[in-house]
Every structure is written in structure tokens, then in C-alpha cells.
Length: 229
Image (cartoon, rainbow, N blue to C red):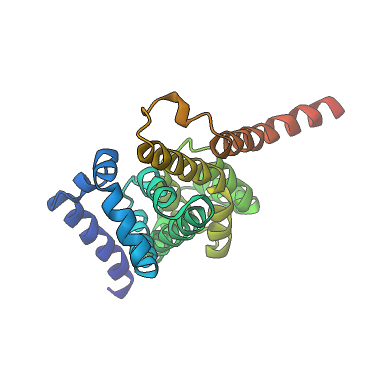
């Protein structure tokens, strides 16, 4: 029963999150309304603020709550671009690894025993290029963040490969969210109207360009490979 304990703790946390309506606190309106109070408190108690921010971020990701956007934005608002990005990347990666390990410990052996041959072949092919697959799934968020955590655990991806691929893969999108939070903070402080102007900032445009290049690289590689053949 010990192998079920981590997963049961995560499920209990998720149920509590919805039962106590804690999702009401994860909204942009709440963040905007309490922004100044939170900012002053975080500056006064910086280390504690960083610890609590990362703790809640890790728990949210571990419980598969779709909250990456609001947490990364909050990091940009409270800690600035580079520090906010660092804290967000570490938190999202650690949270992903926690839920990955919980599901892997509880289900991976059972899943492998009951899957058909074609799934076993797919699993073998995935393992041969596991890092590349994880990177692509993180860079291009076609599937929900939490779903990638679960599937990777079920097909028994190596923990180090999963963690490294997650950390690298979430950098562009997380940088965009953190930059957006930083720009929103500046707009709120200067009483600017929240419009399209917050998107046309170098700190936001450059990560977008980087993300576009990363997305296009596999396509360019495929075109060049085809042309060579």
C-alpha cells in the first residue's frame, strides 16, 4: 500500500482544492486587486515569499491544477523577469517530477503488464527518443501540461530524462508568462490601460520569437533532410 500513498496524497489535495473553492484565489482579478499588498509583503519578507510562492506552485503542479499561467505571471509581478523565471522553472519542474513519480510508482508496472503489443512497441520507440519527445511536448503545448506528466510516467520514461526535458522544454512558454506578468505589473503601477500595449514589449516579444524559432526548427530539419534525399 505504500506505493499508493504519494498518489493518494495528491488526490486528497486536489479534492480539498475544489471542496474549499481554493480555485477562486487563482484568478487575474484577485491578483490585480491584491497586487500592491502582496508586493509590499514579499519585499519585506523576501525569502519567506519565495519559499511560499515555490511551495504553492509545486503543490499546484503536483495536483495537476491548470495554474501555470497565473503562477508564472505572479512570479513576474513579484520577483521580476529573471528571478521570477528561475523560481517558476524550478517549481514547475519539481511539481511535475513529484506527480510523475507518484503515478510511476503506483501504476507503471500494472500498465506495462496489461498493455497490448502495439502499445509496447510505441513505448519502445518513445524510449529511444524520450528526451526529444518530452522537449517537443513541452515546447509545443499541444497536450495539457498535466497529461504529459501522466503519460510519461505510465510508459516508464526515466526520471532524469523527464526532469531534464521538462526543465528545458518549459523555458520559452514560462518566460512569456513571466514577462507578461512583469509588463502587467508595470502597467498597473503606472495606471495604464490594460490593452495590446503590454504585449509589444521587448521582454515579451523576444521569448515569442525564440519560441517560434524552436517550433520551426523540426520543420526546417525535415525539409532539408527531404531535399538532401
